[in-house]
Amino acid sequence: MSIPTVIETRELVRDFKKTRAVDRMTFSIEPGEAVGYIGANGAGKSTTIKMLTGILKPTSGHVRTCGLDPMRQRVEVARRVGVVFGQRSQLWWDLPLRDSFAILGAIHRMDEPTTRARTDLLVDQLEMGPQLGIPVRSLSLGQRMRAEIAAALLHSPELLILDEPTIGLDVLSKQRLREFLVAERRERGTTLLLTTHDMGDIERLCDRVLVVDRGRLAFDGTLPGLASTVGAQRMLVIDLATPTPDLHDVPGATLVESESGGLRQRLAFDAETTTVAAVLAHVSSRHEVRDLTIEEPDIEDVVRRIYAASGRG
Ligand SMILES: Nc1ncnc2c1ncn2[C@@H]1O[C@H](COP(=O)(O)OP(=O)(O)OP(=O)(O)O)[C@@H](O)[C@H]1O
Image 1 (cartoon, rainbow, N blue to C red):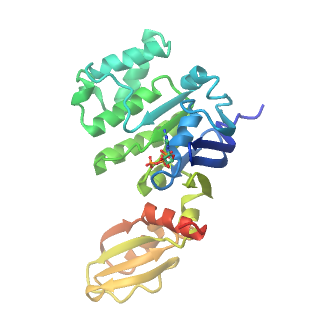
Image 2 (cartoon, helix red, strand yellow):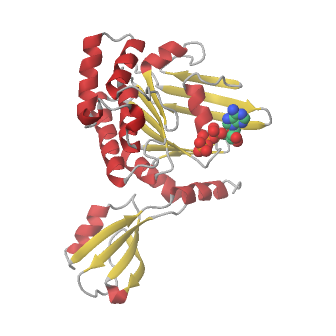
Image 3 (tube, rainbow, N blue to C red):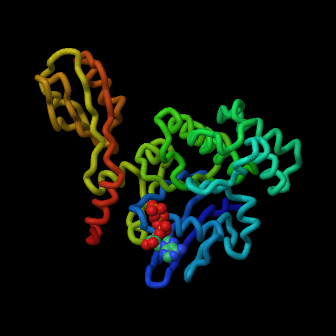
């Protein structure tokens, strides 16, 4: 038996009066994939997600989530999908966090021991033990986002949809959340679909990117593929211990700038032909490296360039 496709849209359309928010969108997502769904504000991301989860009715076209019709089988879809919308909470603000998990367990018709075991596991993995007795309204943004993700995963869904999961979080909170999501996917094979404006989310979590431009699918492929499509490259900024001749001979990398007599050098590198580790190994075998930072292409800039390339910039 073949494994069913987790998400399938064909010629999906949603109109709001005069606005076509989603325009003949066709894509499929297979079990275990992690897909970033990106695009400018108003491009149609939320509208797509709402149609995938049965919140909005398509104007026309075909959509299946976990093999189900989201409008007609909304309850069944909710049983198999976890959703986190950054701004909208699924937790009870005035109750201690642990009560929200108990209520959600009951909503999902889980028995108490199962709810308790699953809560314990998620609380442990997300390091939320100290917050269980605190009302949700008193949690920090990072704590609340972890709680939202735990709540969305309580019933062990096969698909997790996240709308801007790391927006507003500090560097450490972002990192912990991403590590958790990577482990969740590895251990349970959960399929991930996330919208984000943060290239770091895509880079660390996703192996595929969909770019939406005014309701239409403008790109479907890998992140390095996306960046190279528009000629955007990651930059490696290398700080050296002593003034160093220009690093012209690093395979897969091109010197862009050299400052302070070669103490700081900026290299563009092609993620399809080399890695940060390989560049670093090459340079540090010849020179003493003090520090290294990576400058990512700006996601908005990449999206702008995709739009420009499609003649609609
Ligand atoms: N309920 C609504 N009524 C009218 N127009 C809407 C409605 N919801 C969305 N739209 C319009 O549809 C288009 C797509 O909006 P959508 O919220 O899907 O974009 P988005 O990509 O999620 O944007 P953002 O990154 O800002 O969240 C926009 O032009 C928006 O104004």
